[in-house]
Amino acid sequence: MKTYLVTGGAGFIGSNFILYMMKKYKKDIRIINVDILTYAGNLENLKSVEAMDNYKFMKVDICDKEAVLNIFNTYDIDRVIHFAAESHVDRSIRNPEVFVNTNVLGTLNLLNAAKLSWETEDGYLPDKKYIQVSTDEVYGALEGEEGFFYETTPLDPHSPYSASKASADLLVKSYVDTYHFPANITRCSNNYGPYQFPEKLIPLMINNALNGKKLPVYGTGMNVRDWLYVDDHCEAIYLVAEKGRIGEVYNIGGHNEKKNIEIVTMIIDTLLEMLPKEDSRRELISHDLITYVEDRKGHDFRYAIAPDKIKEELGWEPVTPFSQGIKLTIAWYLENMDWMERVTKGEYQNYYKTMYSI
Ligand code: NAD
Ligand code: TDX
Image: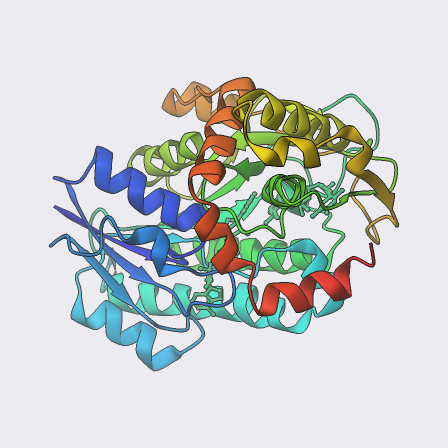
């Protein structure tokens, strides 16, 4: 049985990863979930696994040297899956500092603890691996309709968020190059699915539409993102953790480029298709809610991943078509409106007021 240390396991992708692993691979693994529970962390997501013998939660800041080292000294960690981060571009534009602390210094702290704990006189303990969960945003932006990001594309981040993620990636690379540290970096495109915090495009639009609120589209709505269903991402991470060649970078993408305005339109249409005829919320939802607002500063035009390497080496491909994934996602939000109500209380209301003036 392998022990996985999952950081940021109470966030969107982290909690989906834990739920996915506990369902698919539960006999083979033990998971230790380390999360400080910022506004984006929610233990409610993990209710179905919290009583399991092979799951443990620890409220720890990844920047806390002593606490992180203590985890490595107490448990025989085989895999680190490092999700914990400040993850929202708009917040990074308003307050970059916490992004550097968590994303850069937190990563450095985790690397040091893993290295210290796994090091032997002539290398590292066998079969240990650290996975840095990074993003396609470190490559910058594709300016036209053509072309893809490859693992060899030079890093060219634009936002404070992507700059902090690129810095963390370079630290991981430096540990591989300098100390032969056993690590991989994964760079994925935009994830969507259940439990995503409604500051991100898809859940924000679902929530606003269901409440008859305006749907704020930045700029022209023509910016393109490559959407990946979160479970497909989880399987890719597992494959990289178990089979990826040490030191390699793997891009993970959905083969699913969409303009933002297409996403918003699809959400409106899918909600109207899925809500029962007698549901009074149908009257609130229409294309008239779409409101073009001031563009994001430094807004990257287009992201598109070529996931050829992970397909060739590890046999991974995304299996959830967007038409199916968006229905699964909307169905989850419709069944979990109480989750949405709880996470949009308090801090979220202040954030929304400062971020959107509509
Ligand atoms: P999220 O914001 O939903 O969750 C982040 C989690 O990290 C939260 O649970 C939070 O409490 C925790 N955290 C933050 N600071 C911490 C600290 N100092 N110590 C311990 N825990 C801390 O993020 P997400 O969308 O699930 O993204 C997870 C990872 O995947 C991030 O590294 C992000 O950069 C990367 N990523 C996300 C996407 C996406 O579309 N969401 C795409 C590419 C890459
Ligand atoms: O209200 C909005 N209106 C709007 O037009 C919001 C929240 C977003 N947008 C646009 C901006 C982007 O072009 O939608 C697109 C997607 O925005 P986000 O959901 O904020 O995602 P993005 O900025 O692309 O970054 C995401 O993918 C890469 C994640 O948040 C990152 O953590 C990940 O690294």
